[in-house]
Length: 242
Ligand code: NAP
Image (cartoon, rainbow, N blue to C red; front, top):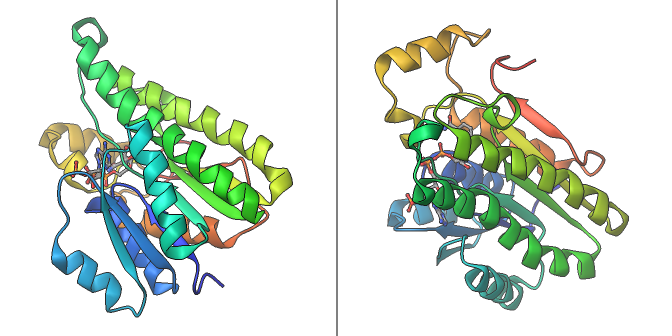
């Protein structure tokens, strides 16, 4: 069903993004793999060994001009852009009363503006095609809020609003737009948390385990395949938020 489609995954050098890129490649998608600082040759080889093309593109999703050029390059290489996964994200945790302007701006610029930038340019191409699936990486903290993450939670809540608005605007052109809200997933992003914090989080998960990157990748493939789900936030969180 996804065979031969073009899928763009931002922040795909590691963690959840890498797992999504590989899962979509397994479905037969050609992959445009965005990364920020570096990507290993073995990641690109792993994707190519699945019999699909892999186009690695370095760049900062927070840069509006980069996003515009990125989408132009994809059109030139593949003609169509069928699946856009806005996964790139960062944290700069700090209590609100101590949070610097820089910590706030960096998180909003990468997570929220980065998602806007990519959607803004990709949607014009998808509108001309009259098809496409956009999947944005939110978080359960965008729904619940979280101590020390005012910047991050605001960015993820913003992504949910952006997703629902775009879903309404783009539905008439056959484009779906959904968000995934992961709970606690074991990646480099969460590896920095103190052991006690991790244990506290685990206690709050009804399924009593952290999520794996494959749990999130499976949800992304499901949303990419389903053309009758739009404007939804799919919590993939072991039951953390019900
Ligand atoms: P991760 O392991 O830290 O990976 C983040 C990826 O985003 C990296 O490839 C990183 O590249 C890239 N990135 C960062 N800034 C970027 C930029 N400006 N432009 C392009 N790429 C950029 O994190 P993860 O845990 O896989 O998280 C992936 C997404 O899931 C994020 O949006 C995160 O907020 C969300 N999420 C994660 C969890 C969790 O528990 N892990 C929970 C809820 C939501 P560099 O390393 O080169 O900077």
